[in-house]
Length: 257
Image (tube, rainbow, N blue to C red; front, side, top):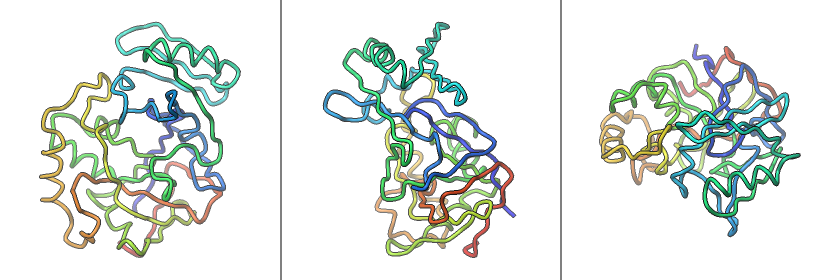
């Protein structure tokens, strides 16, 4: 039976992940701490990897007990630590100096700031899929995980998670540690996975190569109506069983597999 092998949250949207052994699901079905904070420019637009390549050069670490966010630029040793609430002004000043324009930091404890607000539960992928995607390029599964930024990694064969969505009018029920989930759709990818997660350098031909291999390896039982293009991998979810708690080692069960 597939099991949950890794849980990752991203305390600040677009910054580095925090691996945890267990995580609480909020009433809204989001992982507590995941995308709790987000950065915005003066027009209210996300400062994220889609819109700002320099995000990739920000290294971050988060201590949830102290609510402490530490930041440094890639290639430097000088960490600066902030409480994103108590030190909000100093944090925004530091980010403005880094990016070269004003940055506002906002907080949402219930839903966070997901990309897909209609399917704002944890994203899910299998260990086999990460290994398969890595084999298409010159990096390993750990880097694939950093590029594609899942929340939940399931110990299962390649593309196992493609059974967790159906057509556009349906969802697929599954459980993680007894918590009811609904698989909604395959995650449409943006420019972020095509960049080195440490430096932001573009991997030449990444999207073309990914699309070629994804189309060639897409399981025959997948509903191709979702695939107006093949730059999709991972599953977006909703969590009708929330609130609840997930833990590494939880069983992942579905009648669809």
